[in-house]
Length: 364
Image (cartoon, rainbow, N blue to C red; front, top):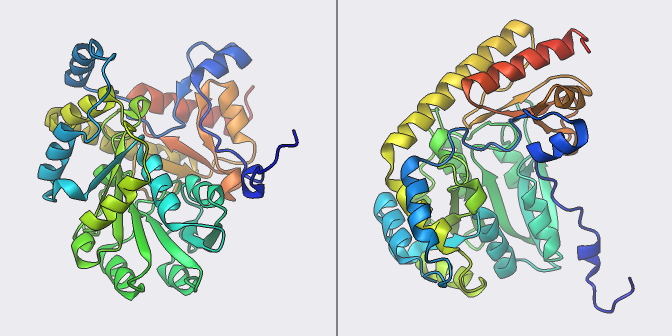
């Protein structure tokens, strides 16, 4: 197709590749009971309170949503002890990233982030014709904040720290983070992507929200997709200075958060019992996987999230898939021979471990 005006940077984008859905495995391989451990979803799903609220709210699906998300905005602001005007909601935290890119990036600008990290970072930069700049992780696959700081240049407009980092599960401690944030020029936007914040185990995890007031050019991203079990509804948010929130709000479309998602998120935020069970199941599953992978002689990296980066071997992704276990291959992230495995239900974790053992033993 030869149309005028197609931006060359759009043609050059390689689209994001999501995890393979179980339905595709059924179609391609005829495996009806595939275990999906590819997308870091909450295996418990949404709570019953959320499902009941969705059923009740579905009867109003013919009405446009509240564009201000008043109830959800109030609930999140009270939980985080911030002002309602400091919140920006999106169709997943991905959309808030997109709003940041629309507001700050153009063809002469750089978006800086560590790599490997979340695959959407280079995509949102390229979508605006900006240059994605990658600083390598250190030998332990954790953020090398010195390398990240050294990569800041005159073109840099936005710096992202994914904490905990996806896909490695590593996290940055408070002292190192504070030094890094303090060192950045004030006219750069610092984005702290905390999509897995609720799963963190380390005691010295940074208080990134405190930097919103200490350094107004800071945005903290969070999501309801992972911990709260609402990935299918697509809702996330950013916390930032009210003036910055106003700027980002100008870049968004009206009604960008659907009414069912907003209602579900409001209820999920208050369901403390479901949150407790989610943490407990993740901790137990993580301990099992780490222990049994060690017993198999398989390397995994310490994780503060709900997934593990596993050195499973070359071609292990396809071999696991043929055994009905869907994980995320890491070759595109430069981690050849590794897969990312979501912590699932006990029976799903066991299924993965048995399949991996069979793969390593060369069973067909």
